Structures are given as C-alpha cells and as structure tokens.
Length: 329
Image (cartoon, rainbow, N blue to C red; front, side, top):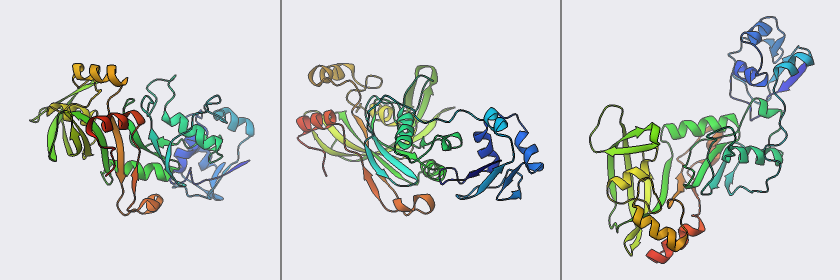
C-alpha cells in the first residue's frame, strides 16, 4: 500500500486527473476499475474520480509497489544539472513566481531539445527544495503569459496548480493590466488608442494588420503614450489590451512607428544602423509593468499591487543616449 498526501502544488485538480499524472503509463479505465474495487480510496472512502482534491487529502493505493512503479514515470531530482544560471526573480510567494526574462530565452519549448524558462523555473524549485521529484509526477510549474524569444520582461508562473489556474484565468479574462516599453521610429507627441484586425500567416510566423474585418481575422486593441522623444525616436509605454501574436510589433509598424531592432516588421536600414552602432540584435520591446486589482484565493497577496521589470542594460543605454531620458517616471 502507498499513501499520497496531497500538497499545495497538487491541490485543486480532480482525483482522476491526478492519478493519470501519477501513473501516466496506466491503461485507460485502470483507475476507475481500481476505485470501484476500493483499491484506490480518497480519505479512506470509496471515490469515483470526479472529486476535487484539497491540500492534506489522503490518496491510498492498495496496489503492489511493482504495479505502481510499472505505471509511473521516473522521479526527477534535477532538470539542469550543470547550469549556474540564476533567475531574475521580481516576486515570489507560495503560489506564484514573477521573473524578468532576458532577451534570447524561450518562454516555452519549441522542440524537445530546447531549454526554456519553464525548465529554469522547474530547476530552481527543485534545487531550492520547494518541490520534489515525486510531486513533479503530478504537477509541473508553468508560465501564464508568453513573450517572444527576443522580447524581454515580466513573465508570471504558477508554482501551485491553484496559482497556475487563477493566473491563467486572469490573463484570459483581461483582469490584469499589462504595459510594455519600446523604442520606436519617429517622434510621437501624444497618446493614441488604436484598433485593427490581425491576420496570421502561420507558415511564415508573420501577421498582417488591417483596418477592416475579414474572415479569420482577430480584433486587436492597443493604447500607447510617449514617455520621452528626441532624435527621431520615441520611448513609448504601451498598454496591451488584447494580447495576440506579435500584436505590439505589427500594430505599431502598421501606423508608421516600427520598433527599433525588429527585422520582421521594422525598417531594415534603420535597424542596420543601430546594429552597427550599438551591437543591437533584437527588438527593443520589454514587458515592463503588471497591475493587479483586488484579488481573492491563491492570488490574494497580489491585491492592488503593481510589479515592475527593469529594462535590459542595452535598452536603457540606447534610450538615454537618444532621448536623454533614463526611463524613470
């Protein structure tokens, strides 16, 4: 017999989903058969699998160790054994973790061999003793907002299932306010609220922005205001109202203000000039600020809080030399 005490990380999911992660190699129907026969019980009682688990619940498996091991994956004790990379952590509590992601790091894996921010987070939680390899059988930390590889800034992650679920729901419902900073071509002297329709070209990983709706297009909405301007460029603060693929980059380019360093949607001649002068190799776009309203549940500690992610050094150097503004309000 094996008893599993549900941790905070594993709570807030259905029993059958939990069992499917714990013994991921088990055949379809195995768990329901074992529950009917009371070979698997929840808090000492017969279960059907639809019960939602809470921290401290007891799941007992009246199965042989050989059966459990046969249907279970290997326990992980490390993810990145030879790295000394340290996450730039902005905020952390028992449910969530906020990180300032550097340029060049993937938010999530694109292929199996990739190492992404998710792996670094998992490695950090394992090495700091906040999660065990056993718990990774049934729960994996995950990020709740994604940034392009060459966009830096604030990314949120769930350390517990409740934190992951509530953060993801908040982003989906636009409960939180997301702000970016970027350096764009042209001097913008007043705030704007722009709307449009975004059309994806999946095979090219490219989007077009149109002014009128069409079949398959997504409505997009973006606000921005100038923080500083001079020498033909502007430091913008962008409020991302809808959050679609490449929205800020494509939307600003569509109104004549492409982001400096963005070769996909920007001005190649201008970008080449900045590359030669500063060694710039990515777009100057940074997820800068995240604002929370009053929150409950796993996110209650975030109520009415604002979190800032400092811009990368090269971003700040370029904006200061060209606009004379260090980026502080």
